[in-house]
Length: 307
Image (cartoon, rainbow, N blue to C red; front, side, top):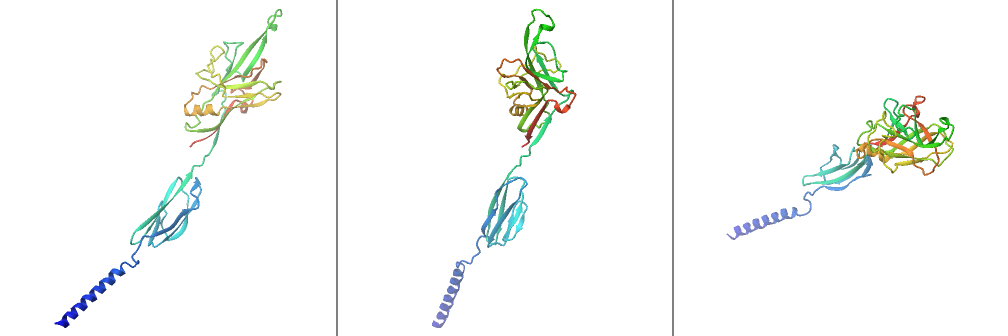
């Protein structure tokens, strides 16, 4: 009986030793662990639209690795070139039998601004411009080939030889451009009104301002008596150079941007003498009716982009 008990105790001890070995072997650090993503980077996280960037990664303890955004399965380490069209986040996923790990890289893509230039230079049919004169306040000059701006004098000498006098009068021009060819969401970088001066002046102190018109008007009926109202403050001014003919340019960027986005009603612009000098002087510039050289008609040159 004692021998049987000794054998029984031996087997019990042997079983306990085997069980202890199993428990200890399960706690010795060789149990599978989560994958380790050592690195997942881009050589640049900000690019311009159309450019490429390299993604690089290194992973250990993984049985599979994949990258989102259509790249798919990849090796444990490597690199690949990507060219996202917009800001994009790439996710790397590493997997093994125990778990999975992830890491992300976001590439910010800056939209490339493509500027365009639109030149609006209408001819007689589509052009809308004219001038008015205080000397002939009921007369319409829309058929003329030129626009007059400034002040001048009229002598009655040719009418009555005795007691003749000089009478001063004012000349003012009005223009309006059709902007339908410009997208309504355009961002205007610059807008320049250009008029071609036909004859030189002997003074360099003559300043002409361009003003925003604030009400409707018709080319065929505009006169000094019914000319539209316009803002007192000028959008910009130009001092006419002495003894020079050629293009005069006014910056109307803010005004054109307002016309395009609808914050300002497009009634056109008025041009008048803005200098304080008392000199009686004026200039003539070609109108949209000018037949000699169509390239010298008034034009509006707009640089813009669509976001």
